[in-house]
Image (cartoon, one colour):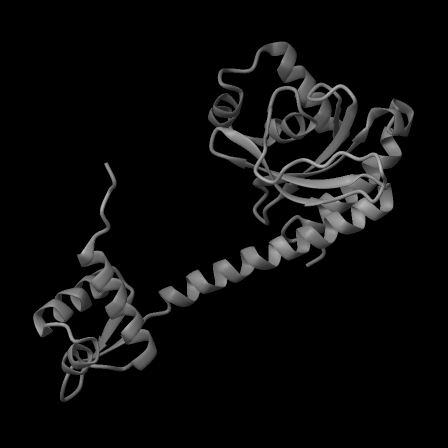
Length: 240
């Protein structure tokens, strides 16, 4: 059975948009502009005011205007957009440096997912699908991200508590600064490094993936250096 939207919520949002576009503005003007009953407009304004989205400017007649809350959200959206652009730029540079497909994976609830990709230009290449789920236990992505997560986050991604042997494995990856794994797809090899928020929280992983024959173990340290540089480049606060 389809769930219907809320007409009340829609009205509140409509009133908020009208306030933002015409501020400062009063109830009567909004009522005429939106062709909505004054009492309904007033209820929407009070709701928005109680939630901190607008405030009343007192005068001969009450006028409403937006608060800085919307600016905080806009700044957050812009910062996220800037981060995405920085990640894509770093991935494209990494793909050029290594000749392999560069990837950004990030946690999404109980999964790790591929969110951004810069394809290798080589004829034989690995190209993961955007939105594809990456297994946390077997992947280089999971193995380099997990040691930085809280215990409950580790359990959520793994589907259960990590055993001592696996904990030792991911701690070794953490100490090395990167992880390498061919266990997800035998013909391919992936090398990954973590990306951090300015407060030190891990927000994702930069990785390269390509045919294992082009990425033998003896070449991992050199490739990992490029991967770590790219991860450091997009970590928040790096170079600021």
